[in-house]
Image (cartoon, rainbow over all chains, first blue to last red; front, side, top):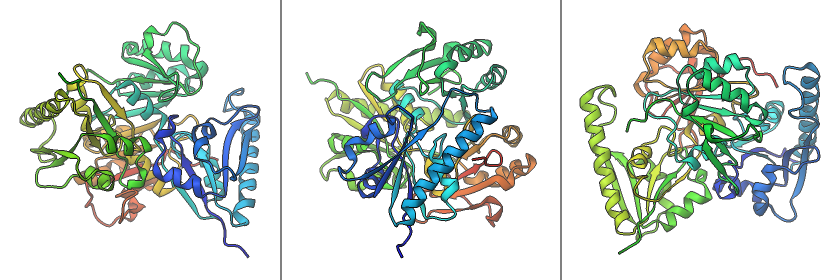
Amino acid sequence: MNDLGKLIGVGVGPGDPNLLTLKAVHALKCADVVAHFAKAGNASNARAIVAQFLRPDVRELPLLYPITTEKPTGDSNYRSAIQGFFDDAASAIAAHLDAGRTVAVLSEGDPLFFGSYMHLHVRLMQQYPTNVIPGVTAMSGCWSAAGLPIAQGDDVLTVVPATLDEAELIRRFRQNDPTVVMKIGRNLSKVRRALAAADRLLQATYVERGTMEREMLMPLVDKPDDAAPYFAIVLVTGRAWHS
Amino acid sequence: MNDLGKLIGVGVGPGDPNLLTLKAVHALKCADVVAHFAKAGNASNARAIVAQFLRPDVRELPLLYPITTEKPTGDSNYRSAIQGFFDDAASAIAAHLDAGRTVAVLSEGDPLFFGSYMHLHVRLMQQYPTNVIPGVTAMSGCWSAAGLPIAQGDDVLTVVPATLDEAELIRRFRQNDPTVVMKIGRNLSKVRRALAAADRLLQATYVERGTMEREMLMPLVDKPDDAAPYFAIVLVTGRAWHS
């Protein structure tokens, strides 16, 4: 009987392939199987980031979401569809682990920070050896691209998903912490209104495709429309910079 | 006359040298000067992380803090001493940049996230070309070492320095967000009391030297004493995990 294979969550960073860590590159070279998430019908962003580091003969396991943002996450049909999807994905990976194969699961940014990998991790960590390779987060990529010091000294940093309702966004913004707003997508007009209500709109920078080709960043007030990809980020500085 | 040199903030990650990015390694190989912060009399942690990647002939520029944690940061003598130190450090770097030399400044974790580099960045960014290479943060290293999913879905992540006063820590912990407490050092007993007051002590994991040799992690309630290094981190999960 084979030894069990190892499950490895591999953070692939914010988009620039040169922001992979040495450890991530090594894990990809050694893995028997490379698994990656994508929406059905789409290519995986994470796979595109690491394409140059994959062995030509590596076995790939695409994990295709049946749904992503079409339904509110509180919806019970969404819940059960997505949990069934993660159950099936974990089973597919477990079959490889049982056969003694090491499986690297790609995660954009960092695996345990708003990443899909964690749903496999919690399903498989009791039965199989696991290893998580941290990655550079999308937010680090964005504030570095903007050259914007985000937090210093006694600052509290708050990371807020734009999917929260408007009243809660306003409440969070009124705390006057440096704030990162993730998962912008179709929520940009709501984020704008909430920032304006908290009197922080002028502190906000919009970043799209940070560290990637066609990176775009500008003060949010200068962005003429509310069209934004899911992975766009808004950075809100906390107070006047003191150096 | 020479062209101006470039200032590069290089994130060197949480401690494991294999968690440097490819881009960071490349920048270190190409830099004319490598600058690193340390407390006077101590070796630089960041330099130790990257030692194997430095060219034998590279010019080094140690930047030695006159003081670090001896005084409260609100103290006006501390303020003026530390600002004078950053002014002098920026001048020393500017002399190299004026001579056309590329200067890489090492930052543990990520340069613009609670890093000393930012104080040089804001002093020099108007006059010189700059580039910031994001790094894996210490907190990502810690939650990956612990295998602990920190934030998912509609979670708000809060990053709190342990240097805040106890009432403010309690107020933050009572929000029930997943929370990272940084800069533990001599503040551990205060953090413990504040977590207990917010009824979250059982959700807390203590991590010391995450990703490094002699990494140590345990439920905070199991840690028998309040001795902790400055870079220790406490991770507080937000609620029952739902997968």
